Amino acid sequence: EADIYQTPRYLVIGTGKKITLECSQTMGHDKMYWYQQDPGMELHLIHYSYGVNSTEKGDLSSESTVSRIRTEHFPLTLESARPSHTSQYLCASSVPGTELFLEQFFGPGTRLTVL
Amino acid sequence: QKEVEQNSGPLSVPEGAIASLNCTYSDRVSQSFFWYRQYSGKSPELIMSIYSNGDKEDGRFTAQLNKASQYVSLLIRDSQPSDSATYLCAVNTGFQKLVFGTGTRLLVSP
Image (tube, rainbow over all chains, first blue to last red):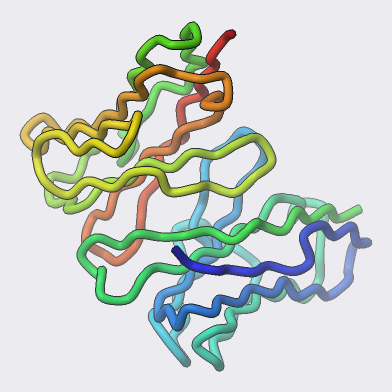
């Protein structure tokens, strides 16, 4: 099982601010993912990475950006937050050596509210 | 048609009963299948994975896969109030990404 950490857990911020949501994992997993989930709604993949210097956009268009400079770190940045960005952001990683099976483990999430 | 479909529920069962959760998927090349449990306000937790046709049992949980029918299910025996949550079905369609269903809300009454 992966140890995945997300900070902050809760964030309330004003419109127009730049924010970075942090995600770190200590297990050396190559693949990492960011999902967005509104209350009671389905998970939407917004970004993923296969490894260092690899980033891809997911299935849901997002104004956020990501970087992967270190294996263990996969931060998500919003340059100018808007109320439409209010949501829960979930980070996940998958166990290496299971490319076929792709078990993903999730961090605790960041609940973002933009006023 | 959605890639992964689940009945949103709620599915209500009494304590001690068997809860049966179902999921269908559209892509025939899908290779692996997962069930996640998500409590309200929390992140999804992986509870079962299945890759081959048939049944896979883990404690009170049994996952069933029928690739010919493109159908995967989760049975929870001896359901407990603590099992009340939303259960997400996820499918690996071969692009190193998971596609999630919308989830089925399960309510277990004491």
